Length: 144
Image (cartoon, rainbow, N blue to C red; front, side, top):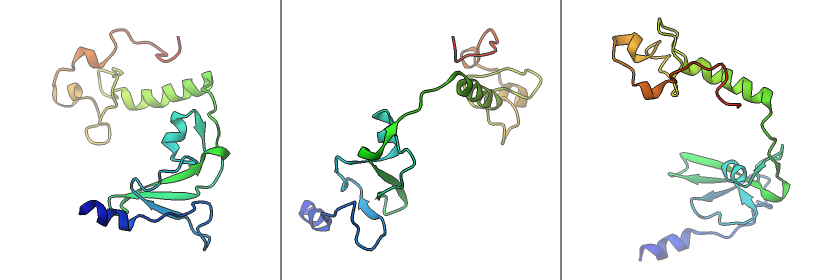
């Protein structure tokens, strides 16, 4: 009985022609089209939107959460990571993972710098688990 009520709500629409110029809005699991994908789905396929505008939107949780849908045929291949980008990413992560307190350790996790201002060991003396930070400090952890 509940399945019949859900089937009545499903509508077959063309995502490339919403009619009034607005984006088509799909409900959760309604957009089972092979030619559309979210950014995350494109990334898993080794693609990126490539500057194209979204052609539809998929909503869940009553419209409180949504994701843009892009055409797969217009997507472009992902740009490979360069050494310079990797160094910049490592510097950004180092800022989030390094304790500004007296210990100055770099952890494998992001520290609660906005709330505590340092690692737990510097904040209240809670000993840090040795598995959360490297034994030897390395200048660059990402590139071998």
